[in-house]
Amino acid sequence: MQEAYFNGYWKELAAFTRALFGNTFKTNPSMYRAVMTGITRVSEGSVLSELNNLDVVATTSDKYATCFGFTEPEVFQALDEQEFGEKNKDEVKQWYDGFTFGACTNIYNPWSVTNYLDKGKPAAYWANTSGNGLVSTLIQQAGRPGDKDRV
Image 1: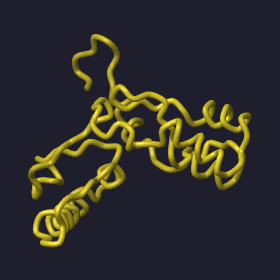
Image 2: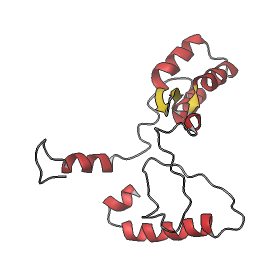
Image 3: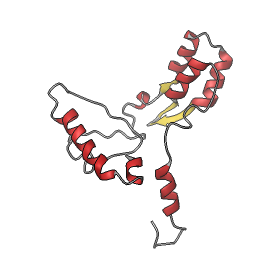
């Protein structure tokens, strides 16, 4: 959605997404409940206008806090099952621990942990998995402190 906004095809993607979500989540008799995840908060009044009864769970909420990544016991159990040693636990903690959701700390990046388990070495596996167009644009548009003419 961010890419569509910045590359000039927002209206087309929004129309497609509204139809997709409406048909998938609202008028689908086989669908009782669904979960959508993402990094950009989308409100009911925009692309999701076809939907209602949404429960937005932000990263500051305790609801589902342990579901957005791996907990430390889960990671250490996976490392034990793959016969990695204590050194590896320290290495994985140093590289991939650090997320907090609600009051739950020590949440690990699941993409990175999964890749570590597969490859056996630490790396910035998440580095090229998303774009920073929105952040870049907001920084470029930001004004200096006290500058009331800029957003």
